[in-house]
Picture 1: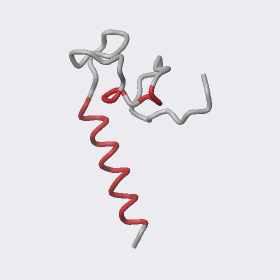
Picture 2 (picture 1 turned 45 degrees about the horizontal axis):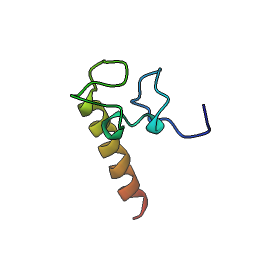
Picture 3 (picture 1 turned 180 degrees about the vertical axis):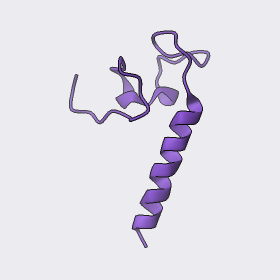
Length: 59
């Protein structure tokens, strides 16, 4: 595995796309590369929290 930052919401077995399942080309029909359901809400919540913290830091 390379030094790429892994998304905190990524499954342990992820090796692609930095762990950002919703944008990974291996995701199909809301299933990940191991045919497990992708928890889109978990990724959206993390990204929203990260973006709100980023916005607050600029003030």
